[in-house]
Image (cartoon, rainbow, N blue to C red):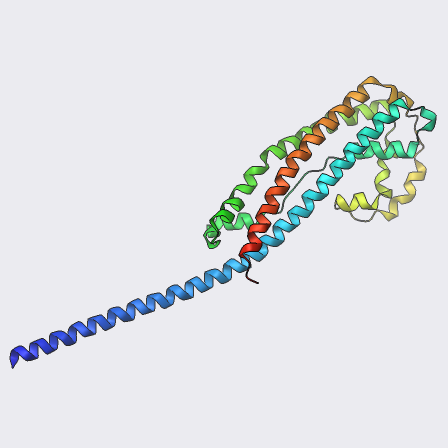
Length: 254
């Protein structure tokens, strides 16, 4: 009888242990399910924020590419003006092209969401490993584009604009921005309507010495070369942004 009681107690104890272990395992599994559900909810919020961020960056870089294309067109127009009879060249048109080639557009991406994910160690919340790697590597992929933008900035600031100041009166050229609402929008500038009458205060300068100057052609050709290459780099960055957006959209729950 004693042996039977001991066996019964032993079985009871083992059963209790098994029940406790099962309870712990079930509780852990429930906790894991809850954590996974919270992570997936967080991931969807992050994906939505990333989508807005990279769509904004896509819009910005497309605007910068378009501005540089306009710079290229203005450079080509000015090269044509050098071959024309000065009497057939419109001063307003020439000033508009001169202003455009003096613009220094730069791509300044919004990466607050991406950087927060990386710096906080929450990048793991993105289940898609490929997307995770793309977001992590995007910032470093901008280095070559930045170098080309700096090259254009230096060419414009240190050489082209001082050359124009020396060989032309640039006052009326600088007034072009007052009339070009579309350009101001691309440069994220507000309304300048209160200054529009200033253009009438600046006389049209004689542009013939500028067009005849041999260095002017050299600057235009340099600007064409630098700008075209920068736009090639921009197209590569644009494609990376589109790839990230496509990966994000594939992960967002409908």
